[in-house]
Amino acid sequence: MKKILAIIIASIILSFAAYFAFIYYSSFSEGVRSGELIKFSKKGIVFKTYEGEISQGISGAQIFSFSVEDKHKEVIRKLEQLQGRYVKLKYKERFSTFSWLGDTKYFIIEVSEEESPHFRNK
Image (cartoon, rainbow, N blue to C red; front, side, top):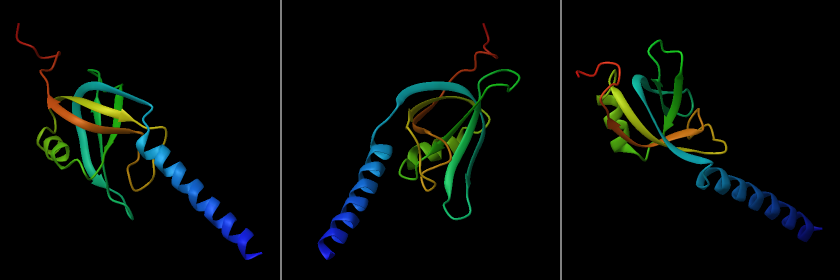
């Protein structure tokens, strides 16, 4: 009986570990989005995560919400400095997320400032 219980517990633990590894390490897609950085904050009650939004249109009708993991300190620092500016974000989309990683499935891995297409001096 103890052997069967140990096998059941081990299989539950291995299933959770496999699920976590799949969600954390596999990506659904990778890409680049650009827009005006309209929001970037650290929020949460139990788990503090970095969340932000960029506006991809003039009227703000298209909003792209994203998260940044704590380990990307340089990305966090750049996003805090570029508030209100036009930015280009390189992201990785995961199948799902955990509450301690972020609110969205889109995780920013790189950020750079771009020239706004709306205010170019030609």
